[in-house]
Image (cartoon, rainbow, N blue to C red; front, side):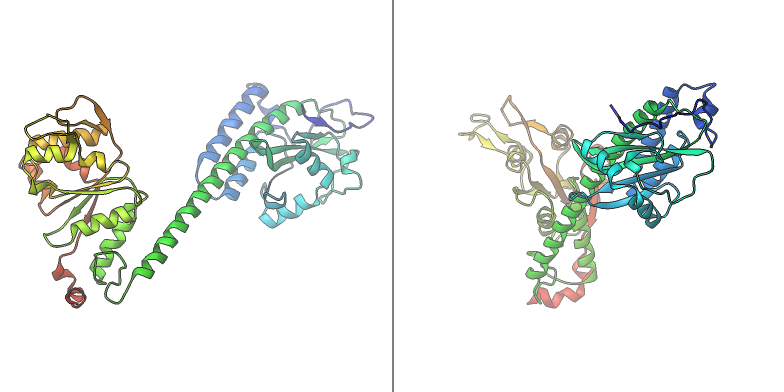
Length: 417
């Protein structure tokens, strides 16, 4: 229940607000519940749009004023020590909002924070919570100002307050405080959830930036005059090489399939390894397989494994490359040289994330990030029916073209050394 400060000893008998009430304007067609529900929905839409928190809260207060008789609305957020870290006011610059909130009596704000309950004051001029307090703006003759404050919570902790002032004729008796308190409490809860979500996103962003800074620091330590990139096995510092590496660093952060394209000798395996090393899976296995080096029957066993007795020579159970790469990265070189039958089996694994060993009945689920490489023109192969279009789109989520040596002649002296 809200905490109600003492009312004036002689409450006025008639109801007539100084400012025309949005509630009264709508009373012919909407109930208070309808107005609150519509307001809550509109405010939730504002909070769902990504943006700067202060700007979002200012928009919430502006919209809130169209559903309530508000003179001033303020959202104040606190840090972990209880100090004010951000204040947003309706139609005010941030410094103006800070001054107004700082002028509010500590007793009134403190009661909201310590009790974790709403506070309602029907007349600030006669309330003990506002004793000795003077309003910064003059109050019109024959008017009184009421105050409602509700806590903004994150779970069970108060992380801020939402306060409003309302002005009424001195001839007014106001009986709708309970409805306004309920409405403001719902809005405050929604703000609390939004603040918590934004802080979680901010912490994740900081964590990723820290990881990136640490990674760049490690790379700078590994860099030498003979290997400016600092990436193992990749030698050179030409613009074409650096551009390819920068793209690898970006795509490595996701879990999408990567297709490395380039001529023979461009270092596709080394770039596949770099994709793994830069990714969140860096501590998991990196497994590789050259699809062009094996016949189809052996290729299937290599990738999916086999059970004992599945074929002549299968004297024991063996895990395949997919199973060995679970949680990590599987690099398939020369993917364009696989047969149509094998492409069907590979597509099923990519679609469903599961397979059976050769000669086996048990379904095995895996979580593998696939990196493929080819020196063929896969688009032409698809048009000729030599490569499945659905598999092509599965492995070509992100494409990186690797430069040939003739495009990075500056690196030849480094490679020669």
